[in-house]
Length: 471
Image (cartoon, rainbow, N blue to C red):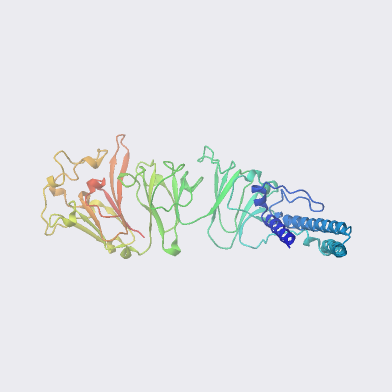
């Protein structure tokens, strides 16, 4: 009985290695010796490996069964020498069983090989109609993983599988990054060449011959960064984080972006780029990029100087007709802590109906309502050293928001912001000229109440205001 258990354990180990050859080869560094009639399963083509391993282990088990039968026969023959009659009979039975087992094993193998050779040397043919991603060599297909770190030295490349086909009738596009070297090495020049990024629609294909490695992913909703204008050349994967620092190699080098929306889920992506890594504070920025359609946009069209360098991004999601669900609107106050200032502060209120899907306007078009308010002197709003801002001031954060009390009539001289809900993004902009005379745009975004704009990092005068309801 003990021998049966050992034999059963041996069979389990052999079968495990048969169905998991990669584990055997990698962890135990097992090399398969060549067997008569079937050879070795190593270095097989991708679409032939499983068939070769089945054939190899079927033949090997047949050999093992034959060897066990011969050993059993030999043990029985030795038992004939015993003078004990009972042992003598057991030895005869063992020899008969060994011969019968050996004949049965060999007969089964011969019969199977005679009737149908493919039963002992099976061949696998991929199903050409099954959806999926495949290596292709003419009409021959072989499954492929979502990445290959050393394609140039892979068996698939050696066997002539130099194309990837995306078989489907409907679904998202497939994005393929093709690297000139192994291990997804990017090289030094991503703008002018080196790495190719291909978008493959359903039923499409891409040649991978000559590539050192590749990776693939499906196109999903989000913001994609490109190092060239027109959404060409090297790109990122989808970016969806609400606030993030832009990673290398895109930090300071983005030339265009592609917006991919989820129209079925009423989720539309937008972004405001900043030239500082910390978007909590005011900095040079772009206008909000927001679209209800999939779109490609060059950053040069979003900045007055046409040379914007983005180091961080405030990514947001919105939707159609969601303004009322986002909150009750936004209040602007002429004083700090305007909602707690009693009758000192003027108020400008934009309801959810005013905002609709989005709102943008010049700041001086939004007038404060001072009905019942007591206008406080300018000294309450500016310290004694402050002065009126001029167009030449490079940094508006040190000057008085307005020249005189009479100028405190619009949101361009605002003091605080309050939200009627937590699902709006309010961005305040001002234009100025830097020391070299270039037009710049300075902004800060708010998603929660700001009791005072000066301590928030932004001090007016404002030129432009954008409000977008977000999800």
